[in-house]
Length: 282
Length: 113
Image (cartoon, rainbow over all chains, first blue to last red):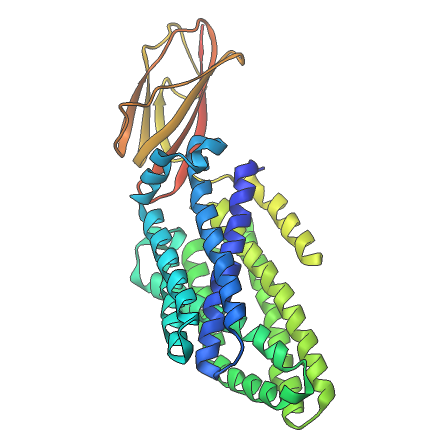
């Protein structure tokens, strides 16, 4: 069993992934598909990401002393600051700060927000299992993986909103169709990058099946398989039906997106366990 | 709701392996029995680490935190002065930070006759 701090670290990591990835993805989707009324959504998730960033950093301090005092201990936090953990903290604060600032700067500001989102995503290259391997290819794979994941997550809520009102059914069909086209490239890239990282990090089939890390990876893959099924139903059935003017398709699409969100939460949760609490097979 | 249940289940199941024990060797060795209380405990790590907390428990009763005041660098070998608390089992719990930013921790014990 992890101690209370271990559990808190997993929860903070989950909130970090959810906040940072959704905020970055929302601004990416906004720029790419010219979406409206996404500022509040992006801002809310960016704030979640910021708070989780600070909490996760502070919990690392507690991990060093083994008690609550470490969360605010200047010596421990100063020590962490000198390591790659500090670099990642800085990139996340700057990235999410830029993202939020850009939201208040009109249409052009969205591009500043997107730059901020990319900087925040790039922070994941600096710490963790991938950075400790020190191979550029793995870092590129992780960045591509995360950008594709963020875009996928970011498009969901705006699309669901468009599909929930008859006045915007046409826009929903249009955005859904255009994301479907982009996803033909980004989703395979996401899977190839994820598969490559899994192969590099787990190392062997025995490690995949026989270790906690590998088993968590298998759960993640099964969940992603479920997501692909839902995404395929959207792309091949509901979006074409909505484009053809079938209003019932909007309801199906909206429900399907809700289920997609639940599965994504489970994927992010599994990832938080993977990156926080499980050692890589050696 | 299902998601939360699932996340909870994953959390419980995933807890078997608590991360990272990069301690190469200790003197006295883990679970060794020595006839005389050593004046210091040596810890030899595989990589550079900065110790942030070391506590020693003697015979399940007396527990004390070691003064790490002079340990201010990332290094691989540590020699920590010991206080003689008599015969019995000494459990050393340590926490530290790897130079890559990973938090590390572990426990070892030895027995004084």
